[in-house]
Length: 406
Image (tube, rainbow, N blue to C red; front, side, top):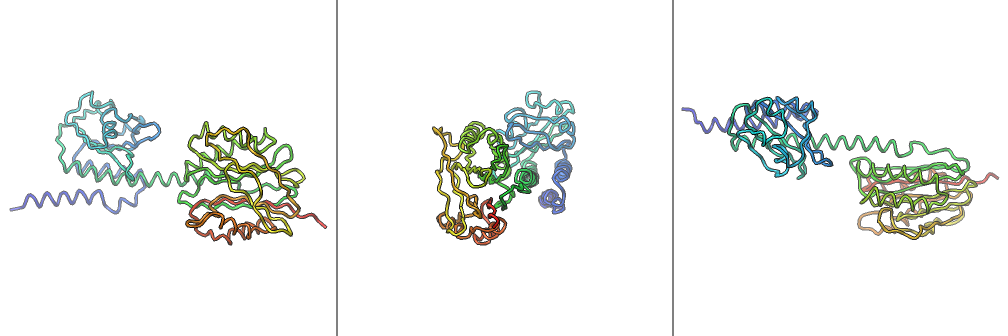
């Protein structure tokens, strides 16, 4: 006589293997969703299966993949958290079973049009955060069991991992594309100056909020910028791009770097709330002999002059951008830029080390920054400060006033 319990255990094992099959890992996300929905329809003997992913900003669930409910995806169906069947699952973050569907229980007319009678849905989580809902349905009345719920939760876990991988990959790709578009691929050729720069990401996303910029102005002055937006990854890079563009615009209407940073401060505080930003904006005169600079919470640059020891430039440091503090005025400092001198601007990732005060790293930088060709300065500094595997993003910009010819 066959043991019914053993048959039940064998069936349960078959169901688990069907949704944890290693071959699923070789599928891309769209194909994996479709394959999982096909398998769950077969394993649970249901007529429909659908995945709705969460749009965090809109607080809505968006139909992303479906079997038996393809029209839901084609129509771009959305439902707010708390509304209808899927919305209730998202709100409670618990499985929901509806054994006899009524028009009050669902908000998607497609479910009623195809004649569904019973529904089972479970939330999808990734890193402890809700990312969507997975639900199945039948056209006949059905009482779903505890095993059915557990199996669907297993499928939801597998789909969540795939969704997380897709999201991470999209963020990574978008961040890299943004980096390429915002960081200068080639610094401008400017008479009397030579320049070099480095950017090294310290995080998986490949970009954060660090940036540098160089641009010529109609007045003949040259603008130099280096800055750091708080945070890392795509969101910080997007904010950085907006701040960079705004500063370029203010630079066109302000002859004083302090005035440009004052306008930028108001912009960041109003439109980028919560995005604390440090920045240094310097302007090199048309004759290249003078540098005007204003500093918003950023590390002061190092100035290396021929025949003198390198030193941190003396300038007033105002609060960072976006603090909400309204200053009477931001400060401007003028420093001489002798022939052959090098100005080295950088972000904290270059000099900051865990367990070590930042002054130690700045001291190493002062020693490494010599009055030499700009490209050589960048190479020497990066080698001297041991940044093969940085824990934070690094931006470095070296500008040298070419030595006067004999």
